[in-house]
Amino acid sequence: MLGKAQGLPADQVFCDLEDSVAPGAKQAARANVVAALNEGDWTGRTRVVRVNDLTTRWTYRDVIEVVEGAGANLDCVMLPKAQSAAQVAWLDLLLTQIEKVLGFEVGRIGIEAQIETALGLSNVREIAFASPRIETIIFGPADFMASINMPSLTVGALSPDYPGDPFHYVLFKILETARARGVQAIDGPFLQIRDTEGFRATAARSAALGFDGKWVLHPGQIEAANEIYAPRQADYDHAELIMDAYAWHTSAEGGLTGAVMLGDEMIDEASRKMAEVVAGKGRAAGLARTRKFEPPVGVGR
Picture 1 (cartoon, helix red, strand yellow):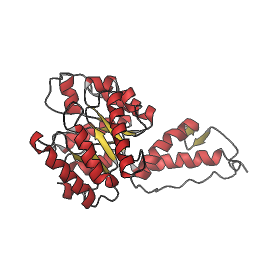
Picture 2 (cartoon, rainbow, N blue to C red):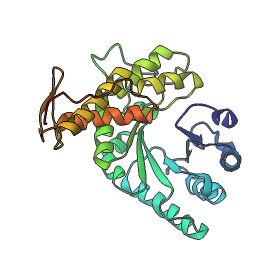
Picture 3 (cartoon, rainbow, N blue to C red):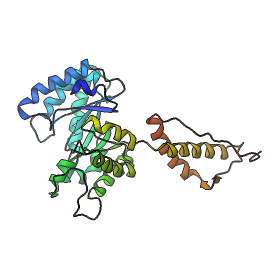
Picture 4 (tube, rainbow, N blue to C red):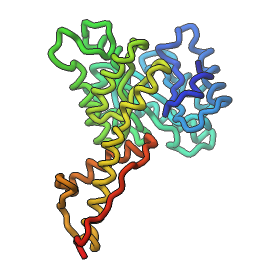
């Protein structure tokens, strides 16, 4: 599986030491992860290892063995079931000590915090601001559903007994916190790996809120995720036009005008900020423009 992951069109790959590894296989899994990081070709992908959560006996050895063994080829450590700022601070301190011993730049290895419990969601703001290493806040739906006693076995899907999206508040709170902290917000997995339409439906909901991406558990989910979290071509083109038009109209050549019309649409500084978000997502997805801004003839001259 680790070998196959190197050839997939994913932005990030994380090697798991937690839920996907049986208790008796934890130690051997660390060695496998170190070998995969050191010997694999992860070009263009963020390299992450998910350690065990801090209520277990494995976490400190996970961090020490993986970072000492493959720290030069590691971008982030993911802390699952993060419940408090103190847990993040513990991981930050341990990473700092290892980095100093190995001669790495202190702070180079980031932290991704996974919110999977009621307590973690209650403390999500403190968790997000607990360390400058925090790069991503991730929603973990399965453990979260168990944590709040949600009577469902279908992870991430809507419930026919609930008139709305039961995860909307959770997702929005994580998103709000991530944006306040200036880091990524990532939606969690959809476990029915052969239900592509179900995956698309759940991904579309978090993408509409503004999430940066979603976990995939199977190669068949990657294409859908890359499509859903990138803007549509027409929206990307429109965003670039707004930014070009606003830049031109607010220039001396364009007449130093702060609010103008782009076709039938009024645009201003707020429009530019909204367009910047969409344009940024489009550029990150590798989209190319198909429309060009043409300054109106005679304006500002």
